[in-house]
Image: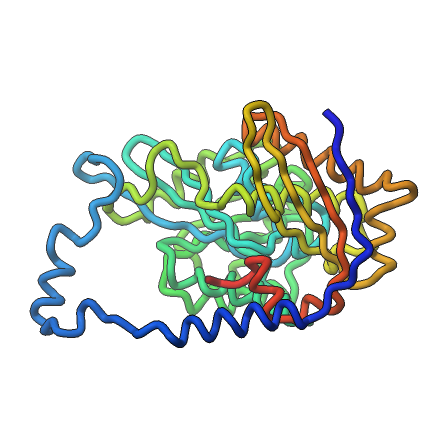
Length: 357
């Protein structure tokens, strides 16, 4: 099946986005606020919270069943997305050698006898240089006090520096249990691993630690068991047949962006954003409409390539991943548009889902 390329020579201005945002804000302000608990006393609210724990979950679970959320945090390229995919056993988070590959919070559900784990892959925590970077940090830091376990990932092959210390200061203040995860052990020798563990313990204290290699599947199951040990008793938060809470549109956009990152490498990675505009399921094929956004005309030319060859290759590679994940034939329609300085445009950042909400 062939891919259709329809690059559009169009530079978007702020007027349309601002108009839509203003209209949405006006509509929101016209809605009268409603608080269903306004007339309830403190005693009634407490009773409501205590009644059958308030949350039934999905399906009956045996006594002692444990469940909870585990956030994977660390510097960019620490191996968070690769570990998430290894734990889940299937690709749900994109990976590349480019820093800040992960921009959206991704959740993957792992069901084992006696417990359910919900892994949360967060953007790499770093000192932000633009509005997008700030939003990515907010998204990652938002998870720290909203999960049961924080897995702090540190690359075994790179010396621990100020960046790791900066992340550690934020992880340290979290109320969650903390597990040190030394990643990429297959690329480091034993002496290097021991030095990294020692340096990591100088940053902060941990409730447990483990050395892993997601690529070699080394200690992946052991890591799952390690974090599961800290889970509280609770309901099954997601149905057993649900693997991720990410929408199909989000996954499609991420698969396309991954191919852009891998094909262009250092040329334009941080300036690229992708939105899945529509998914249309027909009897024989899933039609995918996606738009790749860049900040300059020159970047647009790089992605399209000579005679459209680069865009065709990106679409073809993304299509394969989408077909594998969706289990159906896919027909791609991919556009490239310019949105100047979009990484400092809050409205546009929200439109791509790069926020903590």
